[in-house]
Length: 257
Length: 284
Ligand SMILES: [Zn+2]
Image (cartoon, rainbow over all chains, first blue to last red; front, side, top):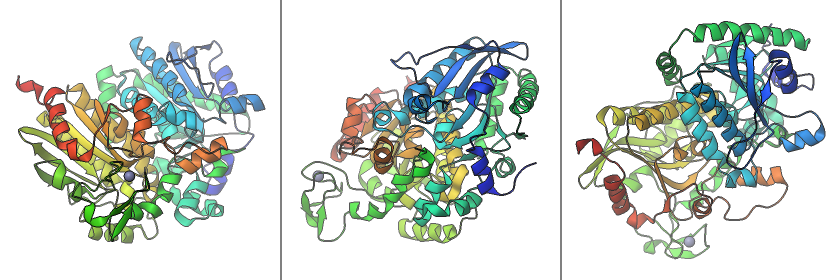
């Protein structure tokens, strides 16, 4: 069931009951091998990446992580990747393309980290690089948004062939609170903002910003089963295309906006 | 701490800065330079609209810039109008007011231009049109400009100025970042030159896409160039940030900009870069 009330979807996307990155990875990719580092001097824990087998083929998995324990949450800036995180994602995605491995992105982030160090390390340039380069990699790329899809920080990990969203997730230009405070100077009107912003999966599907919605149950095993089902079907489909065909379809996907 | 409760996301501060935008446009008898504080008699401000003491370039419209930035230009796609994708209350009226004020259909003027014998495709963003924010028409015009440049094998010069996303167009504004990036990638894959001129202010989603995708990136003195807004950064790290954190000069130090170029030198410098940097190298 898809909820119609945007404010309720926003609350559910941020809920403490939400499936975590750790659960997603252990349940979907039992043989996951984590790979660290951006090769430019850093390793951002807000981006977890590595190799695994999925649907009988090697894949590269790249996920945002908010952490669970408080020290993890602080270290990941509450799930906001730094430029180093985006560079790690780009490095692993390029490596995947080299070996014709599909890339599976999992996104739940309020947005790219907006700190002083992130500015000095080129947060804008890092996201821009991902948009420029990941979008051109001739290998299947699918993104699943499973909580918040916050602005350019999410788009940098959602610029491939398909984007799917869990039923209780959002994808937007900024938070409803931010939107309300900018346009009406009143962040308490966030529920109203959420309605106008068209940030729910059903709104985004109607606008063809995403390919589909994955049903979400309270039982996390069931959630991962649904994700597994969608990803294996879509990968099977995308595997039929050559690299050049993928790029042509991708070009069309973004040209329509 | 919950970041999303602090309206932390990206462009909040840039759009807030809209209120101060007018004070950075020179008019009236006196102008105070927002960068160095020097008070300048309006009569002393020439066509380049720069501060005589620190060379900061005041925010100017696309048409004002084109008077000195190129020798000739033609304006293209000047009739596209945003279809108000969120049906946002009051947005259509705001667009009409901006169109009347600027003589533009949206926040960028695109077309073809020349400096001496160098012919190129160009875009000039207009910070006086809803803060130069990235709307669907802005994105479409820039995308078409890159597509024409690729087809005609022309280099591109793009002057950026933007508060970031166009809030009133929501997710469709975000999608422009991906659409333009694809067009930039194809232009680049064709072996063609893309020069970015960062002007005050270049922020948010524009910084996080085509402003940082050039082969050569120059900036005007003291132009504010950044991703997140000052207030958002200060709320996030719970301390004041240096005044010049997002000055173009600081980005040169950190390796994200090639050169700072004063407005009065810009045209000659662009000519040299177009000549040396690969412009129409297919002719040789
Ligand atoms: Zn000055």
